[in-house]
Image (tube, rainbow, N blue to C red; front, side, top):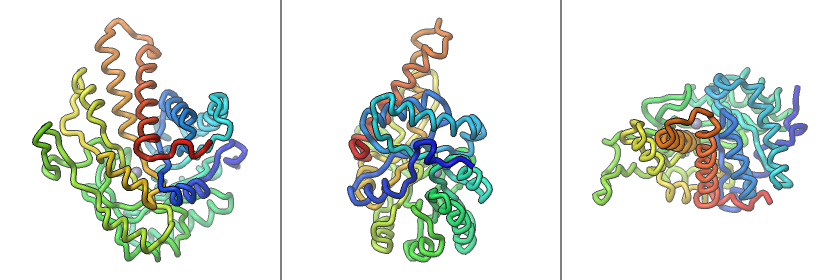
Length: 333
Ligand SMILES: [Zn+2]
């Protein structure tokens, strides 16, 4: 048993309470390699923003859970080295798919876990979430649950169609499961292809696809049912056109990649939404920068030569999200 407290990490309880009150959201960035983690920590340290480091099942399969945990421990020390005296860093399991997975993360130093039983019937979702909550709370680890189904593909999470969260179910779900935060479905979706061209309208000026708006009416109804309760948005990359263009310009093929417009995320961050998950944007920034560097420098073969600009691109993207979209800068000074 390793307690996250010994690793210098924090759970989400206090940070979410402050975010809901303050009208901003905490960034939850996925990581599965060193450059990504460095970029996240540099961005958070520079802006003094609380940050959630997320590890998905795909990341654990790719990089090894134990190694990722030690990297998160190193991240706390690294943040202090960068001059962030009181780093507020959460290590969170993204989309835990079973009690056993969640337990193993609680036992090995994660400070927060998500149990995603949203594909199960309502009663079974409550029962499994409650089981995870009862275990995790013994160790002061916070638990995120999910109600409703998001469309899209991310690692091993996928669904063809989304089903919005039903506001009439949230009180019973939150009360009986005891979860600390709730991921809801209001039209966000996983991956870099959040909407088909048929679902979008076309901007007559630029020819770019404009996605359908998020269901803010559903969000506001949920807020009314559960005043002050922390709400989470998954699948909230904006799929920045500059990185999509960079990928496409230098040999990539990402036609019609489309995300959630940042104005909508900015609006959501002001509500009870206090955690916004961003993964694809980092992948796009990294891949765009690597493609550009290699295309312009065909003789380079030292990974550091192309990973350095990739890291810089990710860091700039993370800072942009923190400062201009989520408003979490300066909240962990
Ligand atoms: Zn997700």
